[in-house]
Image (tube, rainbow, N blue to C red; front, side, top):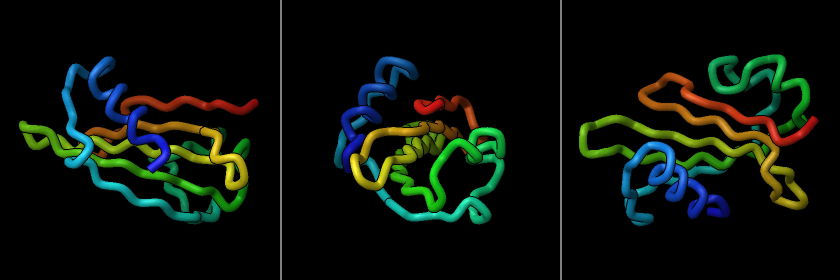
Length: 100
């Protein structure tokens, strides 16, 4: 869970929600481009990312019942963050590309 602290920090600084690390779910998967939904990563962003993708996903359900998910696309060798997307209740609320 490489980006656990990043998730907790963003939830606090950007969304004003205190999250305990023990309350966060974690999954990591490899996906080929054709398996990735455009809602998660738009096609114009996907073409700049490696194929297959290593995606780390962290999730949290807040006190109101909102589900928060942050997905980090990582370089397989260096684990450097290449792309980040935030989803709340199934809707993308932000994304950031870290490669050209």
